[in-house]
Length: 322
Image (tube, rainbow, N blue to C red; front, side, top):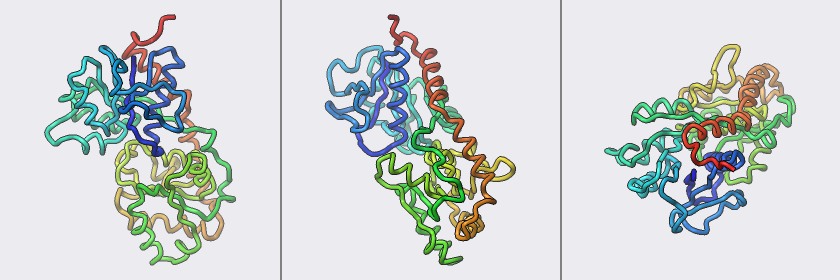
């Protein structure tokens, strides 16, 4: 059986959503697959109906199973280091891939045979450093909730950002307020916190701008969601996003400052904020169109095909024959 290990948490997470989607793709394609949580009885309130196994339940993990462990869980890797199962890591963040490990250990110490990644940068860097093969699986954006509800001309004077990754927002606002108080007083700055995904997406759809000040990302999923909503992007590439965002030229889809440089970000955003205050974002339509085109290419069909194709190669024995 193919088992995707998942943290026992209820918080909104694109990584957890991706884990559950992979399992759903595999089951629909005839594989024996399930999500593997740690403690018996734990269920995601938003993921009912997906088969779940438990690490602490006798018989739920068997010899020969394939276990995919998220990079945030080296404790699970250690727990299964000597277990007679195949072990792989789903590395969604380069930060956690390195930051959660003891300084003198890497995945080879736990018997990890390969990596699954959704970001080429992570596959290249983590795979290179640990001498492990890395397999890229596509990312997708749900078009049912991330879509262009409003034209740029009809967007609110509103900027959204991720609350849990917004530690630089107060510094950015301080600089912008010094330049023009109206950038803060007449534009709403809304922190996207613990919201149901439908409400979360609605805020992004109506906002004119999404600001990403995260210092470290594996895949800029929240930015891609905003792109899909015809919302303008400004911020950092967060180190993991270099291959996805374009900062200049005909294909520009993002206003980009060097990661961590909120001073330059404020300077780069000034023309956009001036136009937002005037209610005329027509000069930015090309950027919005480029971003939408890029994010629209991330379809559920591509993600499903990449996942199923990968497992047909890596573990065909787990596909049912009937």
